[in-house]
Amino acid sequence: MRWMMCLIGMAAVAVSGDAWAAGSKKKDPLAWVPPTHIQMMPMMLPAGGTTVPMTFFLEAAKPKQVDEICKRIPRVRDAVLRSLSKKPIPVRGRRLVLKGLDARMLKPVNKAVGRSYVRKVFISKGAIRMGAGKIKRRPYAVIDGCENILRSEKEREQALKAAQKN
Image (cartoon, rainbow, N blue to C red):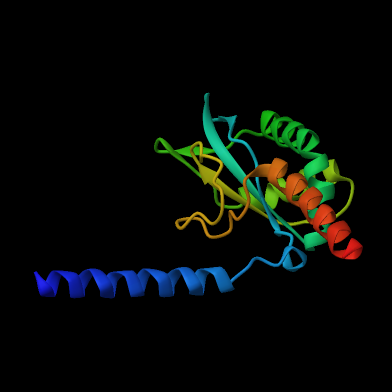
C-alpha cells in the first residue's frame, strides 16, 4: 500500500513537471514561417489509353511566392490537364513511366502561374490525402493545401495587430 502511494506521488510530480515544461513553451505568433511546398488536390490524368490518379506537389522558389501560386492553382490544374491531354503519360509493361514528367510539367505550371515561381514539381502516383503537418513518407508535403496558408496568413496578421496594440 505504501509503495502504491509513493508511485502515485511520483507520477503526480512527473505529470506536473511535464505540464510546467509544456506551459513554458508558448507559441510565438510572430515566429510563423511560411511553407515553401504546396500539395495540390489529386487529379485523374491521361496515361496510355486510360486515366490514373496522380498528386502533384509544387515547390515555390521563395516562401513569399506560395500565396501567389495558391491564388492560381485552378490555372495550374488546367495547364497540367491541357499538357497531358496532348501527350499522355507513357506506359510500359502496365507501369507508368514518370521519369522526366516533373521536368516536362515545370514549364506549363510556371506559365500558368505567370512567372517562374515554381522551382520543382514532385509527382506521386495515386491520390494522396491532404495532410496536416509533415507527412512522414513525403517530407516535402508540409501544408494542407492552400486554404491553410491563407488562414495562417490571416492569423499572423491578427497576431501582429494585437502585438502592436500592446
